[in-house]
Image 1 (cartoon, one colour):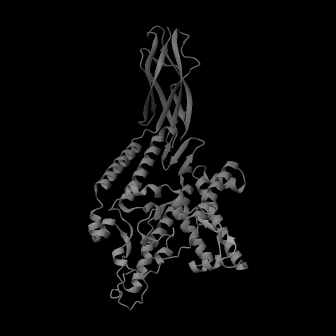
Image 2: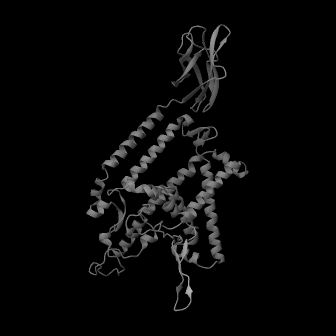
Image 3: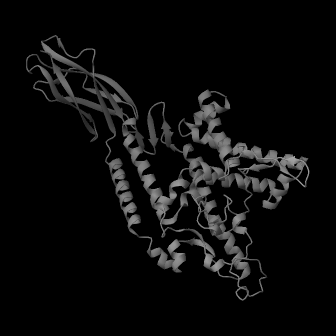
Length: 482
């Protein structure tokens, strides 16, 4: 396994060896090979177009969403300071953490399902590392030229033209990284306020996180690239647990392609005992992680399908049938199945189980959100005054209620209590709370002295939103001293 860039080679000196009868010289054996930079070739084709379609879609959503407004606020905002998450028309509080848990579980199950059906689709088309690496390589291609031009530039001497191109590329990379970091922080700080702070160089923590995420984008997409997928991402390590012989993956048809070798297009390669592979290595040159798919399925493969586009281009030029490298299954290649035969194997037990669980969880979460009461209440007993006798010979307990208005309009609430004979709310029973705001309020409950036996008695607070059907009941206890 190769070490990441920047890691020094480990060398071991061995005993001196005489050379041509002369004096002995020390021989050095390198145990590791320095990581070589990959220069992917650009290619056109179906999968290349799909990759760029996903780049356009994901970045349109990522860069555009924080600028959209919902009424008087940002449409999507995770306001950590105020402990409120705004998601379109929803206002979520920390008490709604269960929805985040459900979303993470659904995302994980969706990943398992897609992987079982068609391998690493996420990695090849929608992973942020893939998307930003594709964007950075596009900038590199536009500034420095195609693969051969980049190779000549990097291995040539430093000239004014080389400095100009390298500087322009770095400038564009930094600009994209900075904007990406700014946008990401804009999901947690109102992005318009963040923009004003950045221009005025205010808000040290906001500036730090913009720089931090910008630097992470710059380093991962500009320099680490495929090494993130090969050495840092855990998904590549456990993906095989979700694969089986009916999973669609990028495959090389060994029986059709071997023995490989160069030939003239006009020569009957079958008569010469050659397979369809002309050993042009174009499939290796277009691979963003630099592997040779002809060596079989490898954990480094991200399933982007660019080798399929490259090979189909060569097959068209040689007038051979397409599909020497294609999306297929291990069973499909081994048994020479048709496309329809492979697709019939998609609905196998593990896929059906994943789908059923995913649909059930998604339906449950959507139903819960639709029926969610836009009112949250927390009850805390006042520990400074557990129980006391007040004027009029009544026994009183004091509570603190946090009432959270999870709607986009001001609401008026009425507080009532039940559970004991003669129990009344002695404080103000009605209050108003602004849109998407919360408020702590002291509530005093009283009963006639002697109407209840000593000890703790269960009571319930009923909080009702006037004019709507929102209603919440929270339990507590009423203490009667001995």
